[in-house]
Image (cartoon, rainbow, N blue to C red; front, top):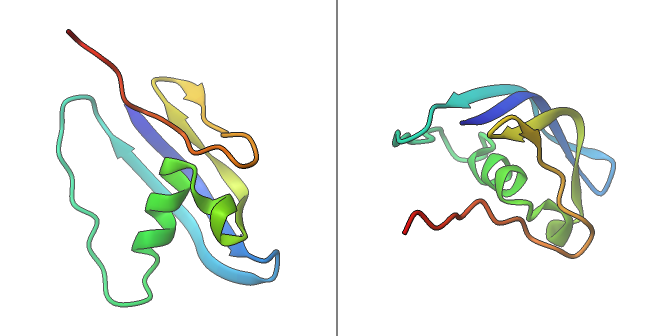
Length: 86
């Protein structure tokens, strides 16, 4: 399961992008992230995938959990949530 808990993201430690985002995605489900231009869809996906650091952004509050484990990719590394079931 993917779980975002009260996520807040800023760009360049100054510009607020999203705040207070919580989301739960159970295993084996498909979801869509919808919103208007500038609503934070891309920022949320970057937070999940670990690509915020490439855009000078960071999670300043909250957490991203995948299968119960805190997800925090290191500097310069994207995350991988892929697994092989075969």
